[in-house]
Amino acid sequence: GLRYPCDQCDFEARTARYLKIHKQSKHEGVWYPCDQCDYKAPENGSLKRHTRFKHEGFKYQCDHCAFATIHSGSLKKHIKKKHIQSPYDDCDSVSNDFVNTETSDKGKEID
Picture 1 (tube, rainbow, N blue to C red):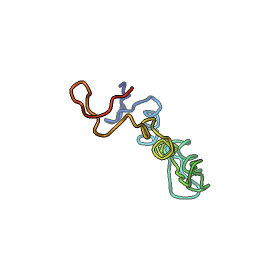
Picture 2 (picture 1 turned 45 degrees about the vertical axis):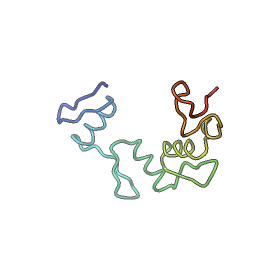
Picture 3 (picture 1 turned 90 degrees about the horizontal axis):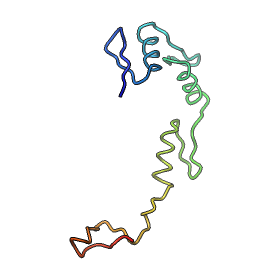
Picture 4 (picture 1 turned 90 degrees about the vertical axis):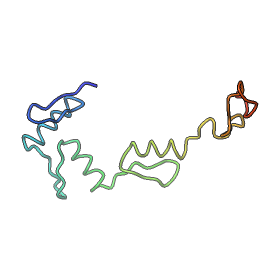
């Protein structure tokens, strides 16, 4: 894909926004310090996210069980893996030993 090269080092960003953040934090010394700990963020949005999760105790909670995480993507993966059933999970027409019925008489044909 398209890359945005830094004109001050060998870094290449995937977006113009990430290149701007890189330049500010790495070359201009722009950091956003947390007022509650030693954490420094490269952008204001990261600092807000840090504060929300680390100091305010926010977590993404699963509606189906006790699982909780600070990453929305981890919750999505958890729900998909643990709570969303595949349409093939209980299907009698699918077998682990399924083989092509045109070349073998083993396995079950899928309607």
